[in-house]
Length: 235
Ligand code: TMP
Image (tube, rainbow, N blue to C red; front, side):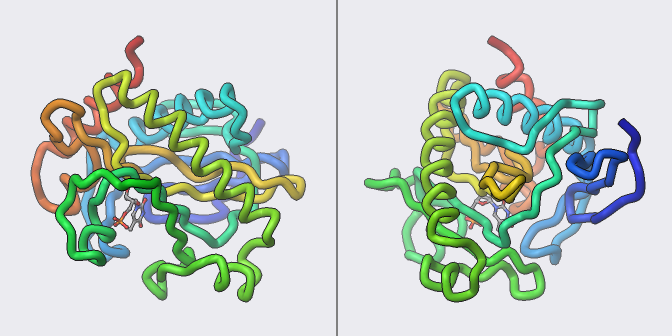
């Protein structure tokens, strides 16, 4: 398999074509942004952590019946993935109040949700990924009813699997963002699952082990990325 020209460069990853038109190579960068690219920086080693962590979590999810884009880890920063067409949706799952939910509802961070909360945003940087609901999704044809039903089902199942997995490593899964794509007409999980896209708190101390340390200038950013990778690599 050969790495060909770059197809797309995002804020945290580059995507390359390969000589197989059904496969892409994702190359994870150390670049970090927040607030829709307004804040920029570097988190040394982040690309390696996010690549390895996503590969491990996608394997775990596959073993538990969730179809994902992951094919194989190629190197520290690269993975071979299925060439999906991404649905223009950010799917957010929340177990505990934090971030924009806490702000929007005027509540403190750290309050367990009585029911799992699912939110959708329209994936569009120029618009700042506005929140949308099912009606917008169907009216704008971002996904069909069948596709959205699967997205919801998979997102809730991913939450169950990952919440348990992290808790066994003394980490609470507060919230996270998923993206799905179409591959041979089927909905599969794509993008990444990492401290960039999850809020992860130490189960005993509530120490933040995720990108909020970068967003909020809390320091110790590199250390917690390594810490999360260490905790999920053990056992
Ligand atoms: P939020 O509270 O800022 O809406 O974020 C919810 C979750 O989604 C959190 O785990 C971080 C993740 N997220 C992303 O992965 N990408 C984004 O662009 C944003 C805003 C949040």
